[in-house]
Amino acid sequence: MGILTNKDRALRDLAAELGVKPLSRFWAKAEIFLGLTGAAAGLSIVIWYAMHGNLTVGFVASSMLLMVFGAYLAMAGHRSLIYQSNNLLTAYLAQEIRQIKESLYGEAQHDTLISVEPQEPLARKG
Image (cartoon, rainbow, N blue to C red; front, side, top):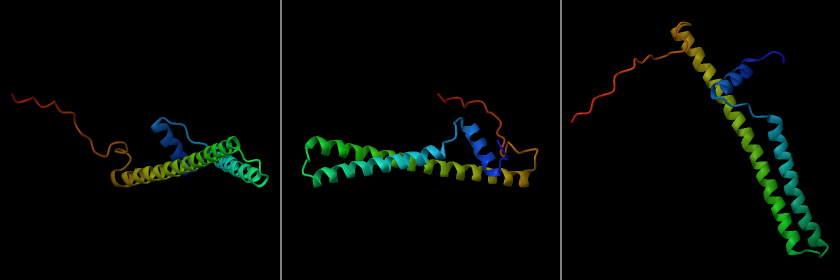
């Protein structure tokens, strides 16, 4: 697989802790490309048929549908890239917090910053 950088390791640890699989950057970019291609095709169909005088309600409706679904697919790909960026920033922040905890408390207390003892539930007054 190659050498994991700190960023890759932090992302892998974050995904493992959350129980999710990492998002594919390639698929997100493919969604954007396919969505923009679909939207452009829908617009091109309307323009071509309008120029040639063969414009009917069916062509307009189908091309509008193609434009809407293409735009939606492009936005979904963009949203996926934003999620990936947020995951990267979260992993970086978690790594920085761990490093600060290690420098302040040492390796022995790495997992628990504050330990809270369980208490008995409070009895109702009645």
